[in-house]
Image (cartoon, rainbow, N blue to C red; front, side, top):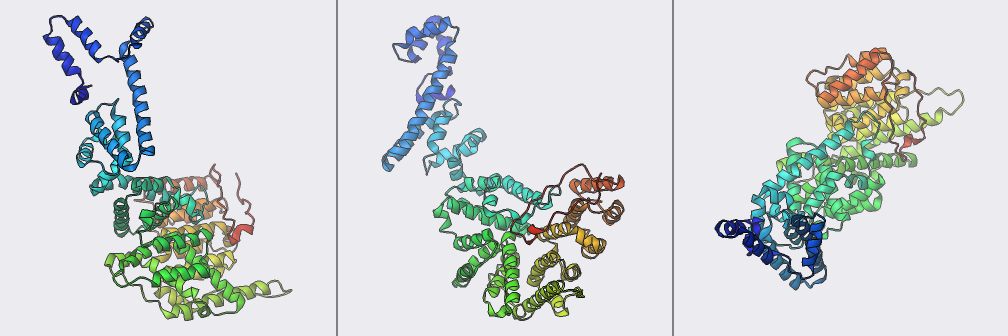
Length: 571
C-alpha cells in the first residue's frame, strides 16, 4: 500500500529500506509486525489459532480491512443523515482530506468516494486530480462527476453523446419495426419517460441547473444540425421526468415548464379540452417583450411529434363535433389556438435557425376556408353513411376533394400536415377514393407528408385496411402515385418495405413481386437490403415467412371495433 506513506503509516518502501539496512532481517520483520499489527490484546492468541487452520495473515488482514471499511462507510452515512448541517460539512470535509491521500489504494478508495457523495462543493484540487486520472474518474460517484462536468462542458458532452445516439436509434427502431404493427404514438408519456436513456440523462443532470442548461443546448444544437424532431421529444421528456421527481429547482427556472406540463396532460388524454386550451393560450400570449427567446423553447416543445399528433387529433374531433352540431369552425376559438400550436411546432426549426423568435402569422383562410371545406367533407361522409342504410339507395362515393382545398394543401405546410390526419380519418371511414385523392394532393405539397412519423402512420393505416384497398384494386396505384417519386430516399424505401412486410399475407406473390420491382436497394443500408431480400424470397417461394406479427392495439382508436381480417394466403 504505497499510498499509506502519505499519511505516516509505514508502507512497502519503509519495509524495503529496513530489510536492506538491518543486520537481522527476522528481528526486523518481527518488530515491523509488532508496530503495525492490530493493537488488540485478545487478538494475539486467535492469530495462532488461524495459523493452525492454514489461514495466512494477508487474507486475515484483508478481511479485517473490508469489515472496517464497510463499518466506516456506514458511519459516514450516519453523519450525513443525523448531524446538523454545519457540523456535518465540517466532519465530511475533514474525513475527505484524510481519505483522499489514499484514494488510489483500491481497498481504501471506496471511503473517499462515499464521502464525496455528500459534499455539494468538493475542493477544486480534488476534482482536478480525479478528472486527470482515468481510473479515478471511472470510479468517482455521480455526485462528484456532476461537479467536474459543471466546469468541463466537453467532457460532459462526451458522456452524454452516446446516450443521445442510443435514444435516437431506439426511436428509429420503433418507427421502422416491421415485425409488429406497433403504433409509435401509442406510447404513453409515462412509458416514454421511463425509457432507460431518458432516465440516464435525468440521473446525470440531478439537481444541477448548469448541467440541465448544457443538455438543452446539446439538444438544440443537434436538432438544428439534423432536423430530427426526436430531440424535441427528448427535451420534453427530460423536463417532465424531472417534474415527476420533483426537482423543483430546475423546473421552476425553465420558462417552458408549466406550458409543457399542461401540454403533457393533453397528450396523456389525447385531447386538448377547452380549459387547458385557455391555459396554453395564456402561456403563448403572456410572453413579455425581451423574453422572445422563450417562444423558441415553446416551439421546440410543440415540435415534439406526440404534441403535434395530439393537436391534429383534437382538431379533427372538434371538426366532427362541429359537423354533427351544424356549427362553423369560426364559432369555436379553440381552433385558432390549435392552429397556432401546430404552426409553431412546424416552424420551430426555422425559428431557432434564424433566431427570429416571432410567432408566424396565421392565415385567416385556414379558419374561413380550409376548416369549413374539411367539415363539408365530413358532412358528406355522414350523409353517405346514413343513405347507405336506406333500402334501394344508390350512394355515389366521393371521388375528389374540392380544388380550393387542394390549393390550400399545396400552398400551406400546416394545412398539409393536418390533411395527413384527415387522410387517416377517410380510410377509417372506408372512403377509399377520397383517401387516394387526399394522398394525391399531399404528394404535390412537398415533404410534409413524408416525414418519418407521418409515414409510419400512413403505413399502419394502409396495412390495417389492406383488405378494403385490395378489393378496390388501389394498392399498386397508391404505391406508384404516393411513394413513387420519393423512393430515392432511404427512409421512404424503408417505410415502403415495412408496409410490404406487414401486408405480405394479404397480397398474392405476383403482386408482391411487382411491387418489389419498383424498389432499388442499391446503396441502401443492410437492414433495408435484408428486408427486401427476405420479401423477395418469400414471394418467389409463394409463401409467407415463418414469423408471426403481433398487434399493438389502441383501445381508444375508432378501429378497435373492426375485426381482424383472416389470412388470404397460408402456407
